[in-house]
Length: 373
Image (cartoon, rainbow, N blue to C red; front, side):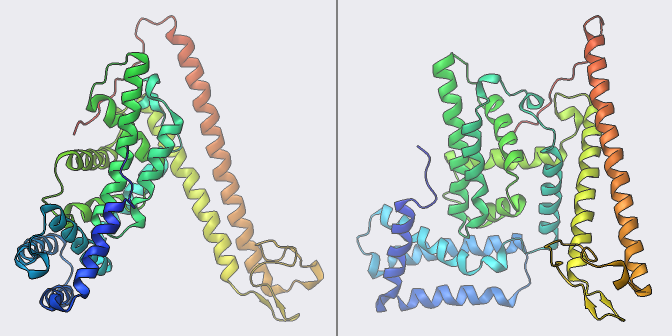
């Protein structure tokens, strides 16, 4: 069963930690924690150095807690609960200072999200050589939802739990397939392609920054075993997506490039259309002779200026705006027509190629080359 991000142990550890910190006898620990948090405001963000400082603080605080009177006779489980609470408290307070804190992190997040958005338009399970027995849309959707929750949390452990939940759903899918259909589980050979496909379908926000945050600020003593295995697989998935090209997949290189180009063109048209409409919503167009205020929506609810305007209401000053709108519309129409022609041409070529392959002695096949973790 997948561990939930709001599991009882998470709540117990955090609130038990807070209760102990409210005890007057913990004043020395409270001062140390507050002093550490404040110290981060003295330095410019440096993920590597910040992560090292946080890990050293965890170790120092664990020693202090073990020797403290409030934990006299405490079990290892109670100590661990308190450390989980400490991690959550400290990193929640430092979240805005430590998460996606550099321009490079934001740039990588944006590039990954943009590439995934292109791949989403055409990538299919067969391109990753995922066996038909593992193509379970219901399980995939559940795994996608778990991965999509990761960005909603601020504590490293809770983000990691989202990864664990996602991966356990996939593991259960593999296990059920092996039991019901005698499918031999091949470990990472089956697991990783499904995780890659699920990640592309989910396109989790700020994937790179979330992975870096977990790696730097999750207690190193807890990033082991199953947790480390699942984390490493998602990190490998991120790297695979960044480096992905036609030869990484079971797809013809020409078809791959055409699909990517059409996806870029479609995204460009959508972005330009959004920017134009957003600009028109923001721009205040005033006809000087009539006093018309054409800002925002028209009376009929349209997002476009001039929709409710009569010819007699227009002025010479409106001509420039109308000409700009006309040119934008023609350019977008031309781009959409070109995209449609490319799509029709690609489909025709694929049908033609399939017909030829039935009599050809040299079938065009491309084997997938997945970069293994």
